[in-house]
Image 1: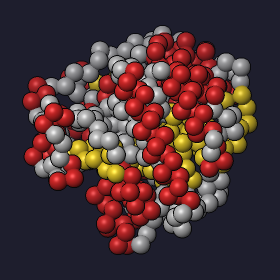
Image 2: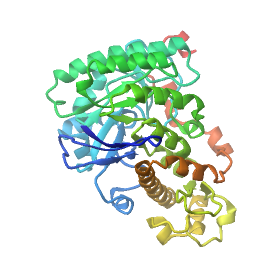
Image 3: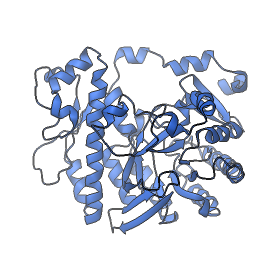
Length: 428
């Protein structure tokens, strides 16, 4: 994996191209850019055929262990790579332990294990299990096993433990990688951890820079615990950490940072030096909050805009206009607000599909605009334009959603295997 840096603007971040994969040498991603968040290797609610209406070019996929762990035996038996197994052989697969859209299940990590939140509940996996799975999947790039379970509320002791465990895992993973014939064409992404402690972050970068030639890029993690709460994350504490880390990382390597960040916070992180994000924000807005992204990124527009549209609101029941006027996505060209409102009210499967297609299209266009403003060093103008738009009140789940216990949490309590048993003290 290679990253070609083309421009570094004074106040608006940097432009580049990510590519150079051994399996797909002609595939590239313009940065700042996005890779597509997946569930089990597939973009949620959007089939391969439907995706042709959103993006008809090969792309990069974010694949997480948490929702592909159950596929290991099948992939291994097929003797195919994970890309071939999910019928996305023309797309690049980047493998990570966590799904940025999923809320972690509480628990105490064991010394030699890292918790992964699968569809069957919380599972603790060892380094050997993780690297065996990576060898089975043979992704185009992967991140070594690491401990990124920190956020702004983590104690100094927890942040130090995150760094110590990651350093140990990293050393063992790199040794495994060097001795593995199956992984010789896989790129490695180095994890930068340390919570909100800038000194620990600096130490984490120092550890990674010792073997810098092995890494195709870096992942800045440990800023949050994933899930919908990230959409409301305050960047006041986050941005200084991200900025400091980006200054310490080599300019010629790509920087990933995943989570369902608000579009305004994305602009700040781009200015700080982050190159690649994911589309979990789009998924959470469409599927969990039933909201269409309608914020304006045309800085020449003087109209009053709203950032989101609640498709379940009764005011759209007889509105036969598109979700967003002027939008060229399949949903807005073929269907109306009233129809999408009807689909969600009747809980039709087509509702999330159409909303995902619109939100993905809107987010792709948003990043095209970001790249244009980075090129012209006018990202602050775009940020000011977004800041003047009206936001909907934060989403509140219905009573039914609050009462229902996630299946993963239920299974975590009732289906703990012998390998995953913890002491009574840990469970408490």
